[in-house]
Every structure is written in C-alpha cells, then in structure tokens.
Image (cartoon, rainbow, N blue to C red; front, side):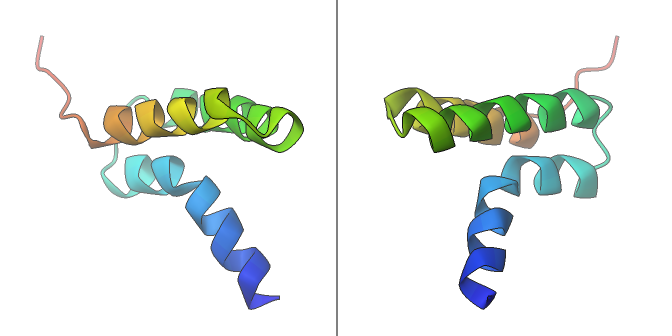
Length: 66
C-alpha cells in the first residue's frame, strides 16, 4: 500500500510542486500530468518520461511578471 502511494506521489510530483509554489498554471500542469500519466501507463515509453521531465521543469520555472 505504501509502495502505491509513493508511486502516485512521484507521478504527480509536478502538480504537487506547482500547487505548493502557488503557480497560476497549476491547473494546466495537473491536466497535462494526467495526460502524461496516461501515456506512461498505457504506452510505457519514452514519451511519458520526457513529458514528466518537461512538467517538472515547467513547475519549477518562475512566473514572469508582465
């Protein structure tokens, strides 16, 4: 049971980071995270891992002031 919680936590790490940093785009990161998670679960490939890395980078970027 703990193993599943750790895996889900790692899968949604970009969303967790975005929410804790109070990013305006946290909703978009969550939706993309669901899509990338689905790709990773069903395709089990390179696309899911690359998408997850891109989401981590997006959640860690600072928001520019316009």
